[in-house]
Image 1 (tube, rainbow, N blue to C red):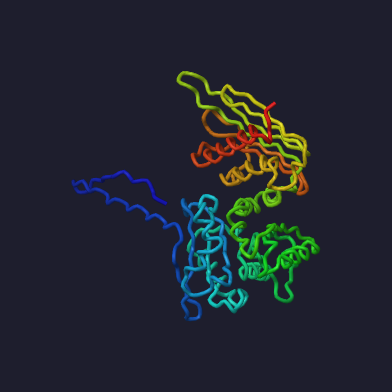
Image 2 (cartoon, helix red, strand yellow):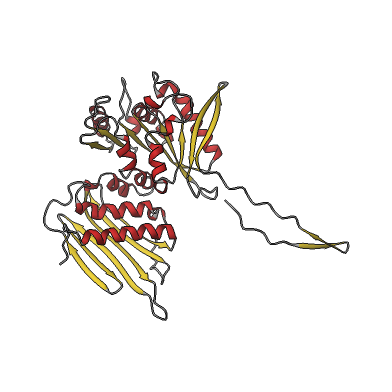
Length: 400
């Protein structure tokens, strides 16, 4: 983090003015995908660490460890970042404010449990090099890495806050009891002819039987490459960001079909014209059963839209669910749910007030806070508001 330049000071000694030497500025922490090496038992291993834009040592950051699949094994320290999570981060870095460790499994004919010392040593080294929140360590991986996520996640359950295996599987007995109270979101393609989706189905069913509550997302018509959809299209990064502090919200982000009722209210003050007063503005979504109502008051416009009858809480492809789900995801992406809850109302031009009530199969959840007038957060919130209004005006939600 760059520090503010210090003012030059002077002092007087033996009749002479002596100028204080300028204090050098702290070097900025490099960000992006950084090549690293680690030596274990006398052998050097290459790995990559991703440091998000805006990283600072002034606060703790979540750690995400990614385990690659068979096709990305090797010792080049590059290939494993080019498939799966790496491209998703490069595509939308603002969604992934994590320090990410990318160990590379050396041989394709071995399994990640054979290299757990390598994976854990790299995770430990990243924790020494960066300021990591010990409450937010996450593990994910695809194919062979999905298998590794299940196995290393179970074997070292005390280490991880949550797991996200993609097209994972088990070989032989796999004790799942350590994961009974651990958040797990698994992904699989139903047309996968390399690792059948039945593998993820059985693992999640067994964990559920033990009293766990895993979420399994199955992609119709998708083969072995379910990782592009999991890392690019799902709410996985938002789920990871909220699962520790706001587990009920995280559940609805992962499983919107479980949501049965919701109210999302965003209020703010529109900037005043020259010499005028700021004008209160508001967007509210209210959903219950098969009906959603949108109320909006922005500037001089006041409008209301209501959904037509129908099963509007079916899944995340349904427009009515998206009307709730997309603003929730956008607010999570902006980091709103990482703020401290507050009852304060927004001052003129000083930010937004967000109040949310959710209810459904995962239980009830309420949250309210004031969002500072941070440009990045404001931009994302504005996009959420515009999305709400656009959907309210669409054919699916005719204005009444």
